[in-house]
Image 1 (cartoon, helix red, strand yellow):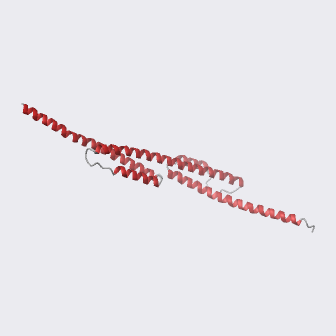
Image 2 (tube, one colour):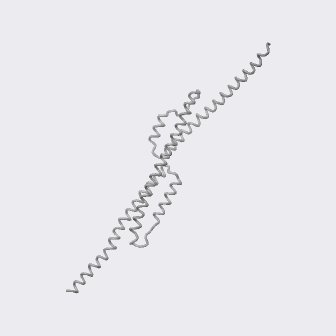
Image 3 (tube, one colour):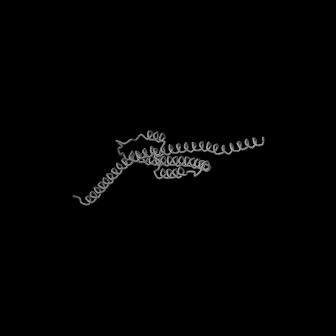
Length: 204
């Protein structure tokens, strides 16, 4: 009877000991799946940000940080949960940093576009007062404002800013040519006045 109890006790202890690594492996499998999902989500977010115009230097830094997280591998089964928890934390931080950096770049691109539009608007007012033609230029400011509101990525905002900047450059060139012609005309008139004033000294 005592031998039977001892045998049962040994079996129970053996079962518990065997259950520890099995439970750990099951937990590790769940964690590993969470890590893979977080990696996939970060890679998708980074790809979208790069397509949207994320600064290449920033993109390279995020890729390097990700490679450092992904390169860590456990040397034994009991280390895996700790390392995978650490990887999840770092991937979560990477995701948050990426979103923050991307939104900051969007804000910077939007500010740059607003500066270009303000400069262009001022130039249009000056050209209008001077009577400089705006033929061939897109002067629909409301349409550009609508495009600005709809743009949602640095690439879209930068492309729109480039269009506005090109419009400004063309109009500025025309205004500069007008100023030059006006200055030459004023100089010619002044020269004529000087000649006439000099000629008035002689009765003949």
